[in-house]
Image (cartoon, rainbow, N blue to C red; front, top):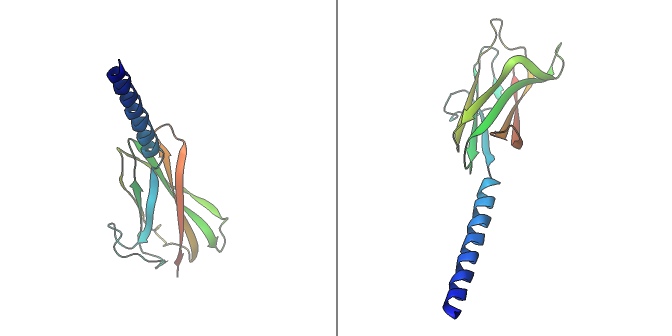
Length: 142
């Protein structure tokens, strides 16, 4: 009888520990880094671009236990003649199967980027669309 009770307690403790571990791993999905770069790999990180440069944004998702959505957008921050806020048509949502990288490519318009300060925002959402994390960075077109 005593042996059964001991085994039952051990089983209950093991299940509770497993539940706690799974709950922690599910709640820790995050954007561990955000890079603004002149190359798609994110190895030439910079905060200054020319009017005809392509802007690459690389967001790294860590600790994602399953599918996530990653929304990237480009916004005017302080650009003469432009209202601050998202630039229409320059928002994209990527689906990831778990941890990994979300890479966004922002190509300049035919006349080039207007000079000024811009902001990129990357938002991590779970599969249902609930926000889990967000990072932003600014850069200048000169």
